[in-house]
Length: 111
Length: 111
Image 1 (tube, rainbow over the protein chains, first blue to last red):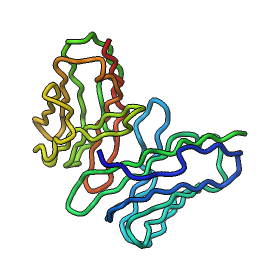
Image 2: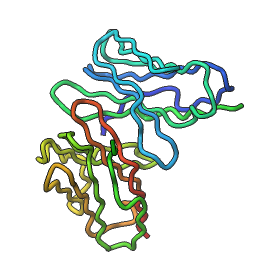
Image 3: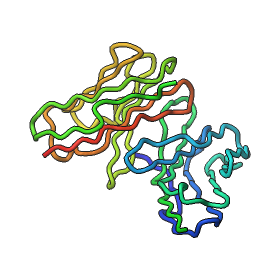
Image 4: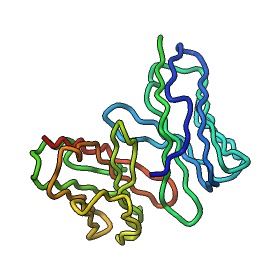
């Protein structure tokens, strides 16, 4: 099925570093969501974005809804070991409840 | 508040057997989604319901898969007969608006 282009595919960083990942789509979305999945668990919603240009923070996490409505990024500042996991972007188009998921970014944080 | 509840958490069965996965959505949510996750294909939407009515089942792989939602607090995903290629983690999610909340998943292994 349709998937969003998410990059990078994986990241290996040192504790304390900042992280940035992004998603792009060929079509316009009206909602962007960012999820984190830990091993053996379901994805957990981190941030939801509803307006083009919207910038939203949740603790050390910041996400933005791109002006073109075709992209979004997620930043994590001052990474810590518990940030380890897979991060997924997801979006919905108009007039549908279906979420289209990105391919995921696997984050590894070394102490 | 209880999140999305799925059972069983793990299921190991033999090829040809019937498998039934269960989901209890978050109270008050009017949409329910069934996903399948594999390493190769990522997160795939199988089917979703709105107000207990199936809206889009285009992701259901074949006739061996069926899903029901007899009331607002319960849904099942059935595979009959199961095949080894059905082995995956199956997630249920529910939402009231565009923000979907996932259950912990059922890890299915078909031998």
